[in-house]
Structures are given as C-alpha cells and as structure tokens.
Length: 153
Image (tube, rainbow, N blue to C red; front, top):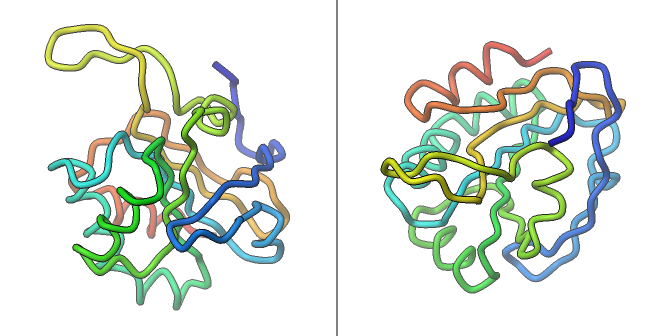
C-alpha cells in the first residue's frame, strides 16, 4: 500500500466517468479536488456518504472544490446510482482497482468479521497544484463531508 503523504504529488489517472467520458486527474489542474473512494454503489454506507457530499455540494463549489467519487463499479451501476440519488458530481469507474491501489484505497479490510480484499473507504483532497493536501485513509461515513469541508484550503 503506498504511503501518500500530504505534500506528495497525487497519482495521475484516466478513467471512464458515469457519462462515458474519459476523465483524467490533469483535467482538474488549477482546481481543488475531493476524491473519495467508496466500496459499492447503492449500498447503505455508500449511499449515505454520496448523499452527504450531494447535500453539501453548494458549499464545496463556493469553496472552489470539485467532488469526484470512485469505485470499482461498472458504468451502468454508476449511472443508476447517480440518477437515483441525483448526485451532482462525477462518479468514476476503476474496475481493475489500479487507481484505488495507487491511492492506498484498495486492500485487506474486515467486513462483518471476515477479512476480504476490496475498496477501503477513504478520501483525499488534491490541491490545485496536483499535490495531496489532506488524506483520510479510513473513513467513517457520518460527519465525513463536513470534516472534508473543514479541511479545505
């Protein structure tokens, strides 16, 4: 698992978004990016987290931050999830979890008492210069969107 420290250059990526467009980290140059990793679309915790970011989107925009969600879900699942909960931000598909691995968001985790490999719910703020501003390697859903807002530069 990579040890991404604050101030380090954020790993680049090029992935498909829920609308089928290819999105690269470099597309956000000059903007603050809140990149959050979630295990699976339309599951209880992931839905609460996405809706919390949705409900605070006006504040994120006011603070000049772009919110982007990422999971290993395929495009149809992302499209359905986005539409069902009216999510006003892009969801990216990382089916081979290479980008999640680069960000330390993939690995062993305890799920209902059983060790499994999968997406580790985590978030990173990437500054306009492409460097990591803040990282949450293991996220608790409740209150997380507010915590991220408070950490924005």
